[in-house]
Length: 380
Image (cartoon, rainbow, N blue to C red; front, side):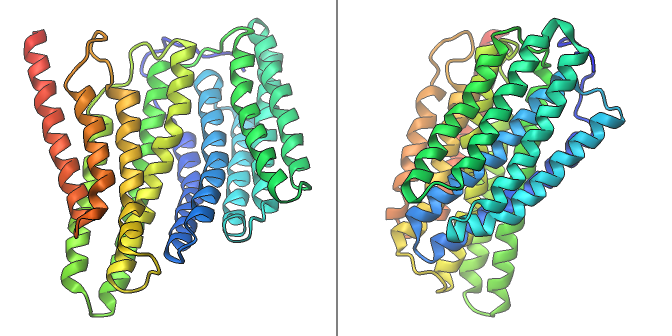
């Protein structure tokens, strides 16, 4: 398992990585479904907290595999088997999502998470054996991950509020492991490969949003009522998803993605991106339930179910891909993105929050495109 070169030409995602993503999106789908159920039943605080906790496990396991694969994807038999074990752990985690969200029972989800992470430990140990130049870094990863997994198991025995405190402490410990390990000698991740992998997972989660919203609208239409309202929601939902895609991929990934601080901020910054995208799907489902009379939420709460994740997404994309470019200059987009996010947040006070949100995102797409073209002409 020799380290791959960060300047390797034509480096692209492999079929195994794409298979990994598709299996992971099962857990994402179940987490979003759990959030939708909690919101409809007006268990907002518990539902949002549980969703964020579950999504941390999904996102962090995915991020760690992606970073490792960018540096050490040898695609031999042992590497494939170890990766398939991680996929199996992801499916166990997915099976435990409903219990974690409904009853705060994290036993199954912890089991799946630990399976994934211990498989990651095995891969780091193999890298330590095969790559002497980065052995210290690989061993730090292996030791750090293993110790934190012990903490996750112990956390299951903590009562009530202590379990939540334990989660916060262990989450910080998970985030600290790469920072500590990479100081011993950074791994050879590939900037272009990392950017592509994050983009592909964003695409897959966006697809899950379309599927979830379409299924819910189909169920509503099967009742034969509220046809006009549901068709309007379907159109507005499509505009929202299309705009989210446009805004994310309209800006290239940072060219300086090869530096450790930027890579860490890029990876960590995608937690709100992925989580908000999946939550938008849950919010659109809530909007359908509200219009068809199947929700216990009031009009403001039902509107915020979509508005809040959309606003978080807009701000996250602005921070990761738009702010301060090019050349570190302040651009009009540095103001427009936050303004649109604020307007989206107040959209539930209107009578058509989903449609207004769709209109705001469409306007943001148009403005962003025009500004970019003008900057391009000036630069040329």
